[in-house]
Length: 477
Image (cartoon, rainbow, N blue to C red; front, side, top):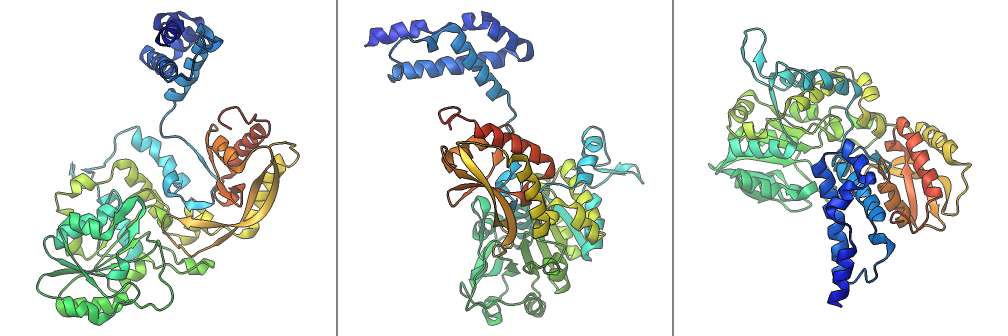
């Protein structure tokens, strides 16, 4: 058997033979030789493994020079692709954590090229000709929109919570309701971030009920903060009670202890005005007296990933002076995107029209029905043995841990399995160029038009048409 394997090994083309093959030669014109060699070695290593494991037992045509060369070209195409790629979000989850969360407004994208492709006054004071601070580019507009005394930004909300606690409560106590000890995506847990910050967590109340007296009973000389965490990614319903921010602030004032609120998603518009479940706004938290508020720049705000810190000037200044800010600061492109997004909020009507996250969340059912009809017209006349197509009503999700109880009525195009299973179709669409990310529901492949952009309709139609004629044994289908 060993001798037979040696014969199979010798049948494989040598690296030099492959490089000399005209098929590979064309690839060398447009690809670095090192990348071509990487593809060759990966394919040859794969063949050797198959031979050793007994998956290849006969010297068939697949071991020939041309077939191996073609496999090298396919592998070269694969490893040449950027790792971070465009995808089409057809899941109906607006703030999809795995798909990059919020889509940036067009005006933010327009500013990217000039700022990214040239120099800027990132940390330069144009008035005085001296070193400046990167935080000034968004501080004034954040103060304007929220009436906060001071503002700064870091690279995400987890960092905002971490640096706030590390600055204000290291080696001291932070009081928090047991019902607010949340875990969000990526296993980020409030108790864990407290430990990392050096703060000592003091839990009060129960999972479903916490009273003002629970906080008051544990406040002492070592109490540095009263922390309120908005449970934006889940809801406890039924027999529940929590202390309103206004009462917590009064308690803090009596004892000289600042109150901090982590809003998580955070938003600057009242979604209840648009027929959705009410979500606490940043402005309301500050009006109720919170001394420090942290929230995300993406998610419900609709901007880039960032952690925004607002509140009392002395507290924000202390955080800004913490050396840890250098490790957590945001870069110039994030600042550009955040500033342009915030500028839209100066006119809420404009924000609701131009910030994609807000547009998608608040899109009416009639509008979605029109979108679905337009997409359906592109594929309705297609005949296929692989699946059938129909339009149905369904629901979307806000996502990103926000408004977990909110069901958004939507319109969906669905593929009903025939020769291909729903799982096979989902995998095939995910491998398409560009990948189309759908959701499986009731053994159907669903395209929720809420998160599909109009410019993507032709691509989706082409993908569906290609899938209609796909052979079940090809390409993993």
